[in-house]
Image (cartoon, rainbow, N blue to C red; front, side, top):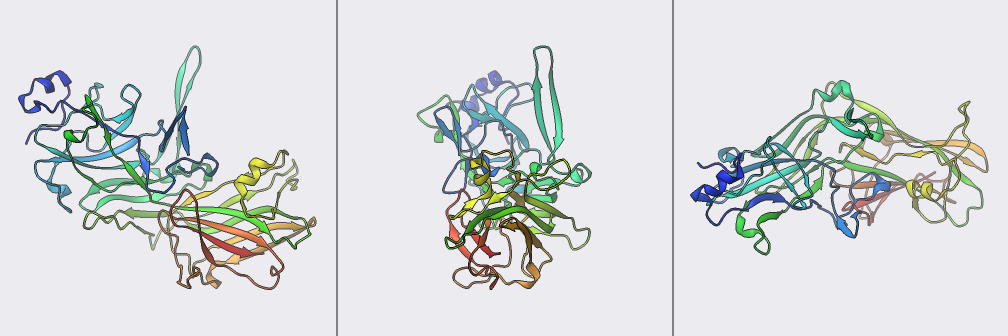
Length: 407
């Protein structure tokens, strides 16, 4: 079986098997599997990303891990392990400004090429390293790179990644206790049977191998609203979510070339964290001096903070969490707020609630690739009912859900 790539490109071009197939392997700007392929920085998720006048769907500074095989016939579902691994299988690829594409390279910096008579099938995940992120710092005299942990350092060594007949498997993934380290975990279907003739406009290289990512985690947001009849000043001062499962294993579960992603939460050695999606500003003594007023129209807390010109904004942290069962769980949400300056709070206990969508169908879990927005509503019914229901919303993530909680 001939190899897919070579260490020295000039040797590749002298290989007779490469006649009319001297096409470098490159990957196009990755896309997200959503109706709005953009990056929205205010949410901390991949949603509107612009570079100059060009719209890109994935940040150029991010690195991708590629899993690839090559084969003479068509790729057949569940035969990944039977095919020959490409030389760059499992490699980390970076954006190459010279070709305006993500290109795999050898350790010596040379490119890989399509091999004559062979097809390429591949999949990808992002980020390439699930445990570390690097931050480069350059001055006039020195250039240094510092490393921090995306996953809490004490657990980082437990994480393993593999790719096989059922697709991507990630064992012992953990969500960091620090929401500043929450990150998009993305995967793709297997892109099958790619050949050099797929290149666009007879380009010298193939810059158009598609990468279309899907979200593996669930996104949690909060928004605020009060009824128009409410004249009191309602100010949010804090939100705490407790008993969130933060350790699990992901399996892509490819069947008939389609993913059926699932997460498994361990029965023993569970890892649970508490998070503060919103905290008001405090003074040196710890007393609350800020907060976010409930608006007459529903708005994300993140958006309200960007509109606030005072110094008492507080901090907002949308969360990226492991999909998990929420019905009859011990998850709790505590909401602290003031009514005309008087402090009060409400605790929502998930084990006492049953969730359903607008069609009356039970919703028992947070699912991969869904955004769940908890809308905190202060209304005339606030002290009469605890109403929680789901309704569709249009957001960068597909099939988003709004959960309305009356305070």
